[in-house]
Length: 277
Ligand SMILES: NC(=O)c1ccc[n+]([C@@H]2O[C@H](COP(=O)([O-])OP(=O)(O)OC[C@H]3O[C@@H](n4cnc5c(N)ncnc54)[C@H](OP(=O)(O)O)[C@@H]3O)[C@@H](O)[C@H]2O)c1
Image 1 (cartoon, helix red, strand yellow):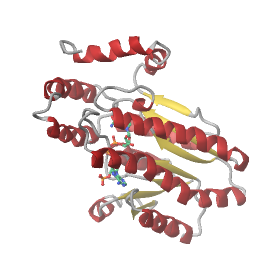
Image 2 (cartoon, helix red, strand yellow):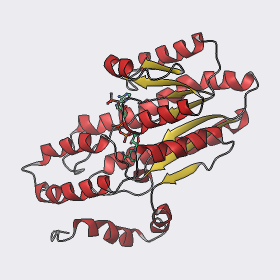
Image 3 (cartoon, helix red, strand yellow):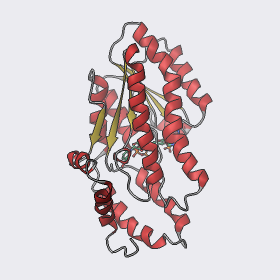
Image 4 (spheres, protein in one colour):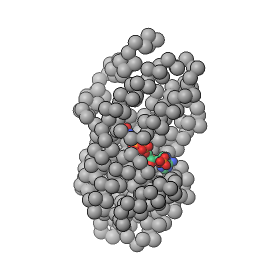
């Protein structure tokens, strides 16, 4: 299969690129920096392409390159993402807009530009043509201080369901793969963003959040585990459309059924000793 995969510079994207290649697929992997493109030329079936999902012209250029290859495109995997943290009250507008620009509007833009290629693949008689969106457990349940990240992933879940339903007549599938905590660089990138809250009324909560976040990251699954699920989702006809990838994922589905006040208590337990709650 010929697959477009966004965000292959590190983490889940890089592991997924490797696994897809090992399984014999052709991968068009996108990166933002030319240095990452050079570093990633791991395999003859890997083509690194420069794309920033917030820059429509770079998305169009990628699709033009794929179209020019003359090969059909079987699937796209929207993996690019950023994770913003901080209290909703003080989150800078530019930060939360960027959160949505990358995770939501960028993902939709990639879908819009890639879909003509996926329709062409169907017209050429190919089956198992699909979109895989990398969501998150944060698209199922909202934790405090990562609310806008959650909001973006809830939006990814809605877009995925909408796409799948709108594309039924055309035989194109859309599913989401939603990991729990995964050991990738995204955690370190997010940690640096809590600095602006020093000196605000949230400072003391964020201090508690540091070790909690470290523990969640340390207990996370590996990017390779997520990549294995993505590979299977790509190769299987009609995979489960909402795949939660984490230890005890059943517990999350159970918590979602509980009343919101009970969910609040469970989540707040993570910040135990926080007297102001
Ligand atoms: N790690 C977790 O615990 C976890 C859990 C659930 C879901 N996820 C999701 O998994 C996906 C991959 O994250 P990861 O954990 O593997 O983190 P990561 O290693 O930081 O990878 C994120 C990728 O997204 C790319 N990216 C960021 N901004 C972009 C933009 N404007 N345009 C194009 N690409 C951009 C990054 O490129 P640069 O290197 O150029 O920044 C990088 O390749 C994300 O959607 C994330 O939300 C992660």
